[in-house]
Length: 325
Image 1 (cartoon, rainbow, N blue to C red):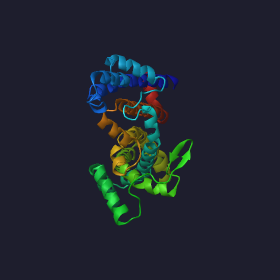
Image 2: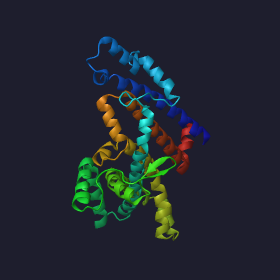
Image 3: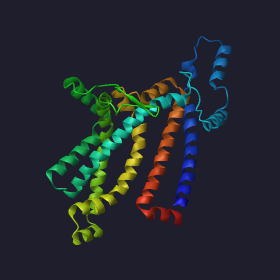
Image 4: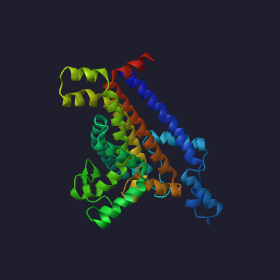
């Protein structure tokens, strides 16, 4: 097991280094923040002084080395617009985005797995066909349109849920969370469901496909032949085996939920990282853009690493094949 983890850690470190190069150089060759941030009425001396203050007077390779050196110390630069640490500005928004993403992930698991399992066990029933039809809608409907419709129905027409904002929050371990208050839960419900719809559909179809495959395996037939109850066969022999691909995909989708929650946060005015990164792109605030992308890269790599380890725990053949290779 230790060899497997060490190999994965080395691979993860190489991915982060490669992505830091791609992210930094890609962001720095698109647009010129000088044209937006510096007053065009400045004379050349004042402009040169402003460019030097922003650190844009150095060659790009020197800027990258400076960025890497500071990144190891937890400093991703200062925002060109706000004049504060880019990492600090992002970290202030992280709890809201993480709360929204994890709530959406939990909803996708709690709703998707039971519905997918039912559809796989009774594929010809009307309820199963309805569930699969609903999953197609979940894949097809645009997130922003669903969000607007939810606001119109539940906030405007029925008036049962608030349309925007985060609501009342409480502080736990230095982070503000809204799911522990009734008002916060009401504010969280619509954006979380909106963000989770696509993932619910994905989990339903993945669970159904796994159930249909596993239910025909010899070990399931043998378990039934031994006289085990239907409940034990389903929850021990079927569910345990279909969880392997489900955990893999759901783990990877967590990164997508965090990275691509921008639309949902914008529609519901949720104060997460989405609005900050959109404003930063418009203003070419490079330190915030680079810091945000590197945080997302680190999240994806960490999630992949955790998923690999969980996968090897659930199926020891994975780590044995990796060690042999």
